[in-house]
Length: 593
DNA sequence: CCGATGATGAATTGGACC
DNA sequence: GGTCCAATTCATCATCGG
Image 1: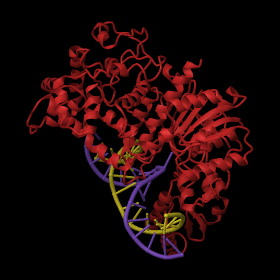
Image 2: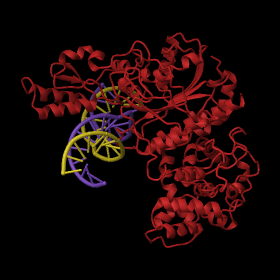
Image 3: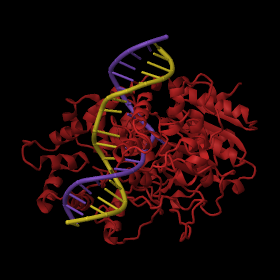
Image 4: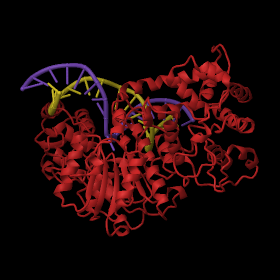
């Protein structure tokens, strides 16, 4: 057990001590704080006029107040056209010495002249370390600000958006240096930049001087150009860009349904491996979330699949991956796909007026005993069929809580082992090892549906006949590992990151029970996977073949009444660690070619 | 402290209809 | 277009008993 990776790096101690909770609360207030600070510096005004909010909005994005006012004057209050004008004006007017980055729409600052093959963290920083990017006037004003505000202001002055800078500070912790913060945002930008070359000759001379002096021929298109191109093509006009869910939700095809008219897909050049990657999250996320996820994952189109085509329970999920999609095959045996087949004992008690054949999504909590009892009493009050009103009440509750009929007039929630079976895990996968029943439901509810994921991963079997090295992020109870194992793919090395100790124990004991010939290395925290650590891992195992994971959906899921905050939510923001790590792996792997 | 329990809606989408 | 209705949803939190 002398595994070098299990020893804790002392330099990480500080990170563990951070109080994330209090930081999270503060973050919300920081954005207006920066906006106000920026406004204070750019000009003094009485913020009473109706445009002030609009002005602050754009000032917060890094545009000067003068420019914003000019743009509003020209366009009225239509923020879309204001933005366009601002982008045009800022490109035309910005002098390179003052603002090396130009501000871009949405949260996309541009990095010109950045080449992903030229290493990860050296070249950007040099442009700023001299501190000469802003005037003395501003520095004077900054004295009155808190250290955090000062950092944020510095970053926005560099051309980063307040939102992005704030997120970086959240992710990197309050002790992070400017260098670390720009590093983090650099990773994000790499994910977003596209491998498109200059095509529009007319812009070229105007933006050329923004690109720095290291004269790369191949140059990433900055977001401004993407914006212009899309606008020209007319794709960008409305919110046409928002991703829609397919109907039926079968992605690029499922084994059980006839899925006509699919002619393969072409991946964006940036997305092509190595490594292969596979990302998962809930399909029904708040508006715009999947657009953002897709944009960060090289603009790969999500594959939305409902697991009701694989098992007896629905599970609507989006998957973004760069795997081949031809010649997939399902796990055998094909699992039962109706409630009666999956839970034969319920058939005897199932009333004819309950027309369900599939269960709804298996979640993290189950229905209460009191509810089951209320339903029993409601149904018991009648001989034969209850009136329609009662039927509707009972059915609504049964659907909401996934209750099944287990006796005369008796409904009950699913047992943990039934959930395991429905999700494609071996029976008792989550049982024992000190985990409570409640936590079993929770861990299972947060997991993959194994058959669905395995179907997508099945193409790897022929590609890696000798086995694979897998980096599994947010592993949970090991859905990815179980899927690969059941496909008969040898797991050479699995590096697994999972915060929950009981989950890690579940995967560990599954690993030991399934006669694995490879090595399982697990980590507690994604923060431990920094560039050095990943490089070290890649060195020792010989590179990762697959980076797989589904980041937390807490703040995206519809069941969350309390904190459905979107991708920037406390847990769901860990998505940015997924892309950070994927980018690092991609970067390091490209050097090994 | 741990584990179980029950109360707590909104966001989003799609379809029917006007 | 708009408006209503129906269906669905990898959850969080305070509380209580052991």
